[in-house]
Every structure is written in C-alpha cells, then in structure tokens.
Image 1: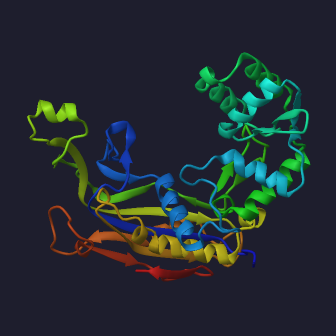
Image 2: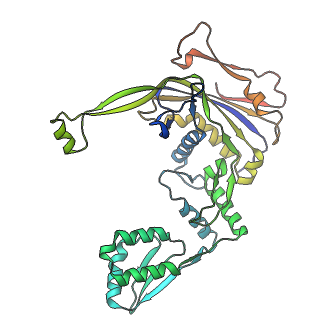
Image 3: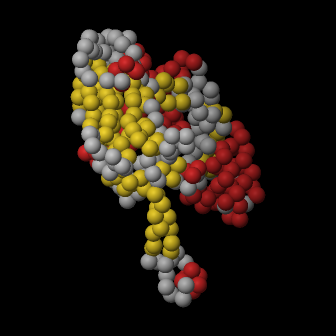
Length: 368
C-alpha cells in the first residue's frame, strides 16, 4: 500500500426528501436543528457510521478492512485478540483443582452454560475449574446471580475463589504501541477516523488520532420538521385488543424533513495518515463510500437521500498550499434565478464552483 504525501480538503453535498437524515434521541428523534437559525444538522458521527456500514458491505469485515465500531461489537475482544496474535501475555489464568465428586458433577453440569472466560475440564481424578486472565469478572458474577438457584454453595465458593485468583496484566508502553499498530493494521475505521482504545476492561491499545475528520453537516437553508401521525393495524398484546374491542389499532408518530440540502466539510492529513497506515487505497475507498453510502442505507425513516456533490481539493504537499476555509469558499450553493418559497428538490439550487487561480492546489470533482 502506498503512503499519502498530499493533504486533502473536501466539500460534501447531500440531500434528503421526505425523510429524517439524523434523529435527535434527546428530542423524541426529531431531525436535528440549530435552534437559533433553523438550519438542519447531521452529526459527523452519523456520517462516519454510514461510511463504516459501506465498508462492511464492500469488504465483509475481512482484514485489513475490519470495522472496530460496528453494531453489537464488544470492543475489548478485539484488544485481546490483537495481543494474542502478537504473543503478548495479558495475565495469568486461574486453575482450581476439584477433588470432591459431587462438586465435580455440579460444575460439569453448570459448565454447559458458563460465560466466556470460565470453563471446567474433567480429569481422571480431579476436575479443573479455569478462569482466563481476560475473563470479564462482572459477567461471571452476573451469571452467578442469574443461576443462583442451580448453583450449590460449594460450587459458588469455588468459582468465586477462582475468579479472585485470575490476574490480568497491564501492558508496558512498548506493548501498548504494538497493540495500537496492530489495531490500525486490522481495522479500517481506526486508521481512518482514529479511536480511543484505553479501555479498563481490556489491554490498553492507546489512542489514535485519525487522519480523516468531518464536520457536522448543515443545511444550506432553514428546514421544517414535519410530524406525521401514523396507524398500525395491529396491537402488541391481547390486553390491548380487549380494550379496543378487537379494533386493533396503534397510533404512532413519524418525523420528516420535506426537503433539505446539506453541506459538510472534511479534511485528510498526510502526516496522521502515515502514523496510522492510512494509504492511497484506503483514501480511494473512502471517496467511494462518500459517493455510495446512501445507496446502501435505505429505510422508511430516511426517505430519499443521495450524495449530490463531492469536491476534493488536492494540495501538492503534505502541509498544504492554502487554508481550507479559502478553498471551501470557492464552492457556493444558491437558489436558481426566479425561484422563491421552500425548496423541494436539488433542481431548485445551483452549485457554483470557482476553480480559477488555484495555484498548486488541484480541484478534483468526484461528483458535481
């Protein structure tokens, strides 16, 4: 993979029609709005999520394009896997030998439902209760509470003692750096966006500052959030059906933006890219994701969303040739002449691009 040796700044335009581009969980999932100006907002986290989802689809989470922040992921497992592959010890496992036949029988039966990191091995004379050094002790304690009725006092004590003897080991600074490098190699989103990997429940892999950064997207004009009442011709429980005498209807709410054109800015640092291993190939994959991410993120809630413009300013050096803001000012969005009232499509706008006197900066029009 080839290293980056140039800085990039870019402008991303995308729109939404009859959908909710980014609901606010603190406001009943209403579309995010700047309360002072009325312009719509889409967070950088939302946009990064769509990039991650696209990479997952295209690369199927195969290394070196695995995704660290993915749905239902247990982040610490990736840390332990990295240290295991690097042959770095994460601590001492706990082994407790059990000679009591009745206790052996009870633990053998319980082992069928043991949580990860806790296991029981049967021997010719003694059984062995094992707790891995990377076992999540909180999960084991919760499992004991949930299965309290089926665990004998002796078995509970044996498990408690074994858990106490398991000793996790704190990695050295050099080992942490090796873990960080390994995580950057394996996970696309870590070497792209960065990550905080100093977890208390897993080996410390340090912190990575990502070379690719995005701003919040902001609509070019104020938006209106509409509230729609919707009806489901079914109920969830028999009790609800009885209350409605069999009518079986459930009312709900849905929020949409009739139309909004959003603009986000982004930055790619060659210096940080060389620290994380972010390559030219990774960059091209990132451009593809910005162009296609909405095509694979359809849902009834999002309505019609699409990328409408991607303008990339390529500098001739890693440090860059001119401030980003002066380049962004060259991309302006205006209403078409003679149009007034609320916008309802991309055709209501015109995008002006000033590519004169750019000097050593090259404008690459990926779209638009």
